[in-house]
Length: 141
Image (cartoon, rainbow, N blue to C red):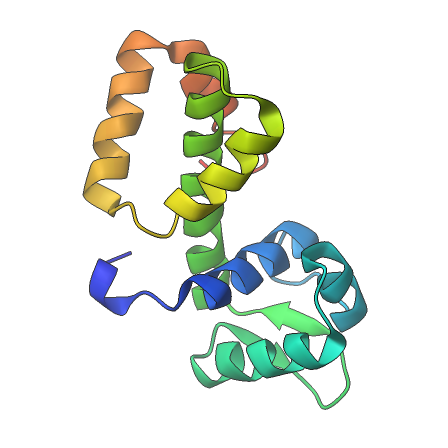
């Protein structure tokens, strides 16, 4: 995804969480589950979902379940993939402790360009194929 067309970090976090909870386009996500996953209020979820709906990344009937659109699925998958690659690199290559790797990958995933990520993946595939493989889990490849 082009850096100029990206959403805010917070909105990307919401979309990534919907992607993780849904696991696919046709699977519903409840607002309460999203609030619990992100440790935020239901009001915060409603506000973020309104933004995601306005960009056509999710759909939701009033007070209903949240569904990813194809566009939202692709974007959410992209954020999740960046996260996995960074997390596994930090933890498995650099030896960063798990919780720190998780937190730092979450921060870094919003700043890295697709070009740099592609180069990082190519590097891992050549030099650390087991890490590259670990970063391809859960449909993020």
